[in-house]
Length: 382
Image 1 (cartoon, rainbow, N blue to C red):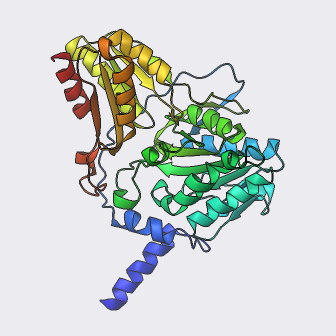
Image 2 (cartoon, rainbow, N blue to C red; image 1 turned 90 degrees about the vertical axis):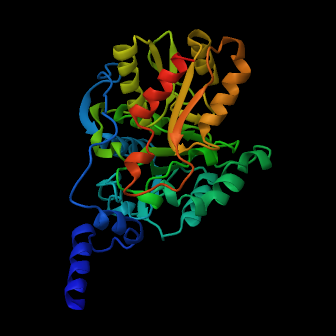
Image 3 (cartoon, rainbow, N blue to C red; image 1 turned 30 degrees about the vertical axis):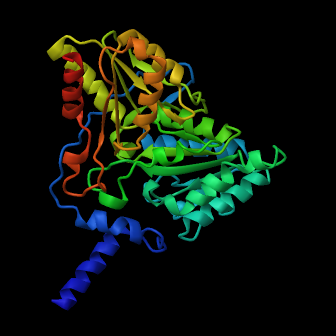
């Protein structure tokens, strides 16, 4: 039995990893080996945007390919740009950097030790010299060892030097959010931790077209940026994406659907959930919903949100992260202060539970369309 068990473990390693991928085993083996052959349907249906026409030729890409395209554009345009992180030289565990080392060389796309605070600290140093630093944290769940470097160093570098020095050319990428089987350490949404930190920008896209345009804007921005990529969309989301570089403005929310009765707000994967909720509300209740993708968490677009709520009188905010202290709390507080006399019902937050992210119980944890629809119905009947 012991020999058979050892052979099984070796087979599992051989099937998941290639030689040299030393940084990935700790984070990827358990979820990938433990998942059963039975797969559940996703809690959302990806809804692509219309093909953009203003940026030239397009190509069919999923989200990870659109990220690769953005990184390729940046390396081609800026000779000082470097990409680094755990396993990025091999293409990364999600393949976002595949082919870039071969194209641009090992001095510009390279692996780092398995040390998140070292990755970000190194990135700060690179950015301070004036070069463009693009760091990858292999999973957003593992960004916390780098918390001190991000919050106490990167975010404050310009302020404490009186703008004599800065690390504004630093961008930190990280796969983010639930994935269907990620459990405690591969499905977290930590954006709220960084929303309390002036000096950085936090961005989360909903689709391949948005991912490329927003990532390029983060890389070009003169402030340190954290770019969280919804990992469940890496392959599930496919759109026609412009091949050439283009830029989508940061800190500008987007009204995806206009409505008159309720405002629905989300970001990342959850945008597709609330789009389904809006369709259900229209069909079953005759309720007109305004759907907003916040896109930038810090600094966020309060003006667009408040303008919408002043019109509809009702607000529902949904995110995967736990309810208490989630970014929905900040949005709710601001809207209550700015739009109090316009509100027709209490603001509703439909979020994850105040528990660690579960494994087999993930379908019960996720704020799916049924939870959001139920909250919306209660608001209408208030």
